[in-house]
Image (tube, rainbow, N blue to C red):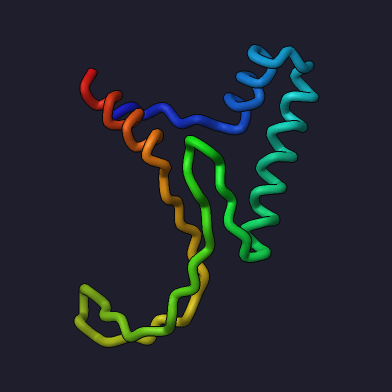
Length: 100
């Protein structure tokens, strides 16, 4: 597995090269898209990107957990968690990449 991480800077650089916007405009565009996605998720909406996948927020109920070191039971508060479900096209593309 690669140690490479795709960053915001990488995304804005790709927009700069592919679309032809200036570097500043590309960075602003990437920030605007990510901000819009984040705002929608905070509001409890799903973010569906065709041929990529769906981001959604799931409510997890309170439960009793266990400290693995001591075995002591501890309460876990209810919380919201971000989930991602890749599309079938994305799953296939990743699987094909594993064959190389």
